[in-house]
Length: 116
Image 1 (spheres, helix red, strand yellow):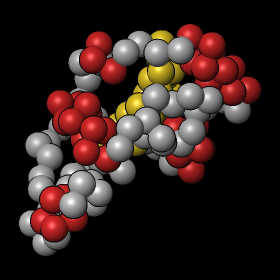
Image 2: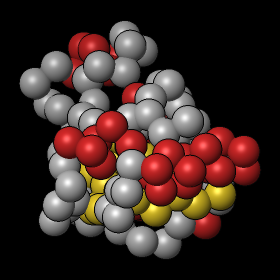
Image 3: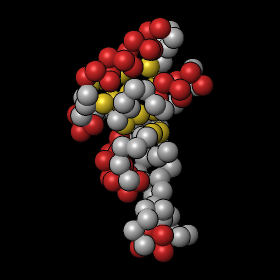
Image 4: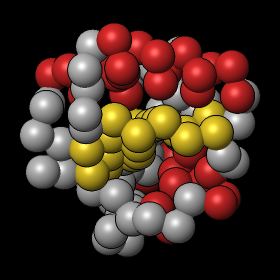
């Protein structure tokens, strides 16, 4: 199955919910706050989610590559793209269809397959 990285997972959102919905995929949940990762570990144990690995680490210490990267309220999309670019198995692409969104500073003009 696919490998998914949840950046700044906090209490496990969206990673744990995705793990429930996609049991054949593997989810790595990362947060730099130890107590939040402890909660994720306990929830994954209670729900018997064998497809979840919760790590108390900074994102820059993660060396694995993933098919998808998710993050909820971690950073604005351009910043999340910059942080996660080397975590994906393929390079990020730019959305040439709407460059005006990127120039406006809204961050809506950039996208990446695998970056959700």
